[in-house]
Image (cartoon, rainbow, N blue to C red; front, side, top):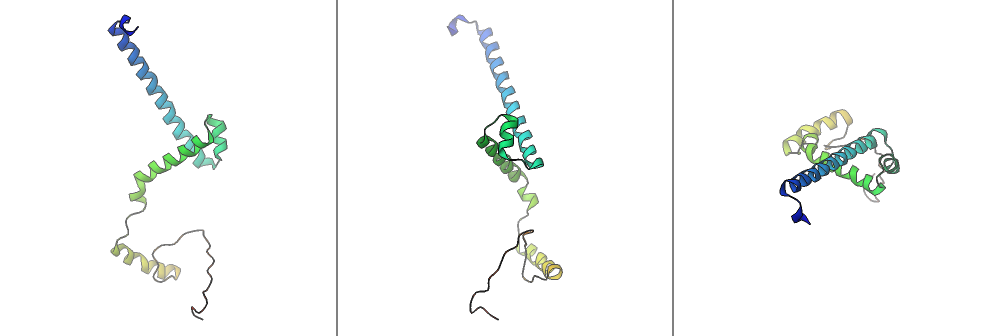
Length: 123
């Protein structure tokens, strides 16, 4: 059957198929971006993305996961620089001065951790 189609027509068919693939990839990329930013901006649930974009809930979860990983891979070094010994020694006095936490170099904001004193550990 393919032998009956002239080579130039086969080339045209192949080019049209490739163009359709590119269009599908572009739509997929667009859906990825739009659904991810909607999730971040509105705080909606994956079920909302499922209905809004006609994608599965597990697909919506996977999209958010993949985009977050890609963003992290690109900006992790900029957002959280490597902690060298010099940088730790520079950070620690600030914690002691402003937060009254000596020997501290990092804090988690918004979390309250209940600490229980162990028996025989002091007054």
